Image (cartoon, rainbow, N blue to C red):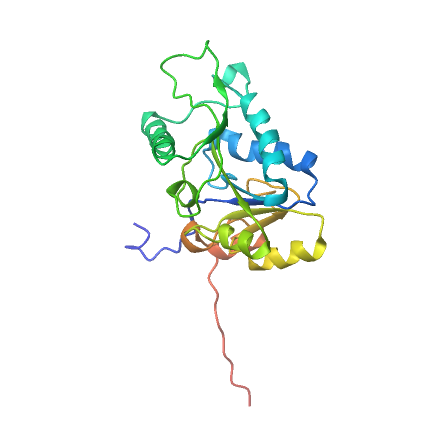
Length: 243
């Protein structure tokens, strides 16, 4: 309808957002954010941190800590105020389960998963949060949006490999960088193809003052911030000859 009527639009689309964790990162600060970024709204956010790239030097220790956190997650109805609620409908639950079935078929190891509480209604679309390890960069779990509480973990050896993994999808909405190295923070922030980059933190779009939107298949235009007003205005050029 927008195309037929020549109406300008802002397209805020999907994501496969990476979080890159270097060996010098504050892991105590990073751990709860890595978990909440994929569990929030049962992973049903376009800006969900659905991929975590971990420096090989700390890959196993951080995976152990992530596994412990995932194993402790509980899923149930909203009134129970647990870690994770239901998926939106049966179709979305089938999509998430198809991804997990592919992982199992392709030999991708499940590092940990949460639990749906016994009291959860059978009619609800509850899905246990799942942590998968050693996900190949070419696999659909590393490239396509699941839109559910599924976190794909992979390792890297240096900045260039981390960057290649982060940019290795058709999406470019949000990215997170965890490192104390200020120069590295800025190098990667500039080179990551993403509409938003969070350094030593991660947000679902940030505050209303921060422009939000993506590149590549993650969309066009910006929401929030002063820049969002451009989508509702038209630039006029007035040329005057003097003399």
